[in-house]
Image (cartoon, rainbow, N blue to C red; front, side):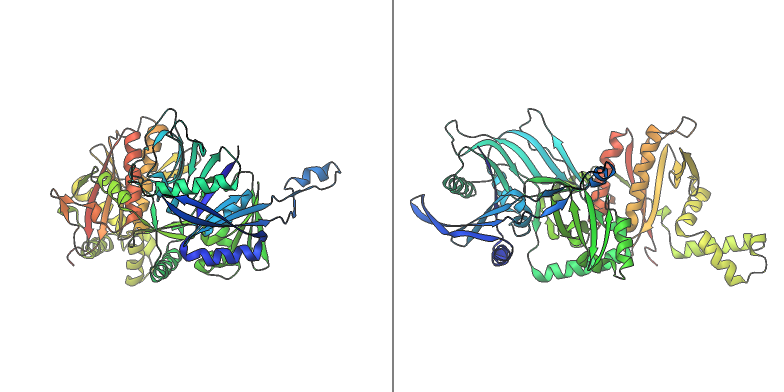
Length: 543
């Protein structure tokens, strides 16, 4: 009994895929044709097999220990790779052998496998790999025991599932264990080309059935003009907010999990320049790109990452990035742009509606309020020793830097509304000093942020979650009691959000990254035993 890894090749990439195989692989023998009668129709399947058997010697990473004991260096030989290409009508499929799935995955129809997954019955769910954009756990592998339902939460999308299919007793094509990602992996009961064609025929027939399961996944963006716009926005955004880049440690290639940092080391390459590192991080990547005199976006396109481990694999850095475009509601993953599908967005919407949201117009802020505050501080502090010998303009500039918008806002909340200002108040945690929150009142810790973009506002979400974890697990009982963890957004916009039941509707924010983070924050805050709260106010709402 063997296994097959079945891909469907994207119709728009078929020519490029064949061209790649003809360049990098050897065509073994001539094409063969198998004829099959399916639903009283005779179908012709054209088959060709491509083999790459370079068998290059690769040095073993731990040769240094052999050298220490005066033993000769050793090497290992790369595994041969094979691809069976199947054509029927306008459709093209590929069965991969060895590590050739890395190649087929780049040219595949990414919707194919999950379209099949929605239409077959399951006896048992064994594992599910879920994607959670903008969460610190952006990919998670869940395992189950005796479980038959596809379980997922808001803000999550499936990257892979491993299931036990509910098959007829006399079924003889493959076993019930199936893995589904970009490809479908079957355990075959007979090793033969005829068996592969029969399995492919079964899959195609299954596609004609009605959907049984709702499975939120991402839909690929195919319009070239739209992709060009997304890339341009991405280019502008990462230059301003490089922390939006997320180098994923877990990838799904076909139906195989690839852990990028397990038993591996990496080369970062640009032309003839190379840096070897035991792991890849944003800081290491950014420093290398800057050393080459490239912009960050140029580096993503031109820099390559070579990973050495169980196999040697080279990728453009661009293909290793996870990034969310808020306005277009799209995700960049493995070099491909995807839309968040309706199932995903609906679950996210319902989850955010479950969070308590409050608005008090008395807490709105503006440039005028900030300037009035700075004038009062000038009258009070201009004669302080720190400002001796300085001009009025110099003093005003220093005061504006000292009492920046958020700090001034927090002080005003303390002055007029009896909040306790914790801004700049640092608490010692082990060897680090941490600012837990900006304000405290009525057993609630508030993280305050002024802004109009996910990249700015997400900071408050991270701060609030960090504070909740520290309060729960690290801090002593000499701090005030906390029942609620609150995020306070002072939105820099001229029009207020539309309301729902008299409260601001945060689903109307065109900030998908932020909404994904809020969804994850809500769930984690509740697990820690606190009540999540969002306050909304506005900066320069009517100025």
